[in-house]
Image (cartoon, rainbow, N blue to C red; front, side):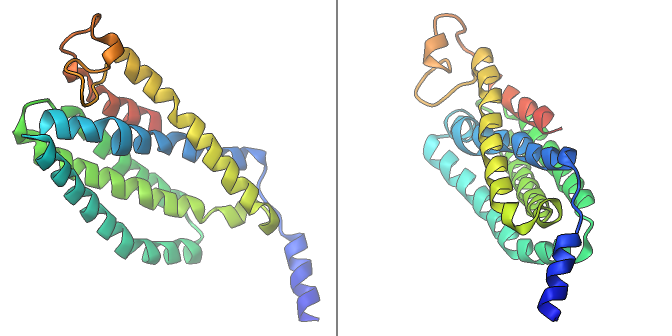
Length: 215
């Protein structure tokens, strides 16, 4: 009797429409450029090669900031995940942590090459943005059981991941056009050396692009 009743409750549960599901999927579309541009491919190498006194110390400093943000995330994510499951109100948390992501990414605009005085600000901004994006993801993922039946959660998760991967490819195209630097090239992207010399200053543009893209 209990099993039958529970099955009936599951069958009777209603889920939001297609617009809500698309909105959930687009979270990954908005958030993935942070991981692509700042964490992995562009800003981290830029910081180590152009902002820090030398690449070795730059990589070490970036690693310390990553470790500090990761420790905060590891300690607080289970607690916040439980809050997300128990409270049912997840969108305000996503909005709040999304603001941290936008603010942290935007502050990295001030990362001028050859200016060690901005290093503490950049590392703090990076840690704030990393905490924001990870916690926003925790609450976003907690919404999946409310959007689709259990048998469709895997499909929804995979669609969000794939959409995010596609979205992460768009901002780099704009960054290439403004000549953001990568290590190993004195003027940024090697293909643009003959056109835009001395364009290391354009790298912080990606932070503004990421911040705006998330909003």
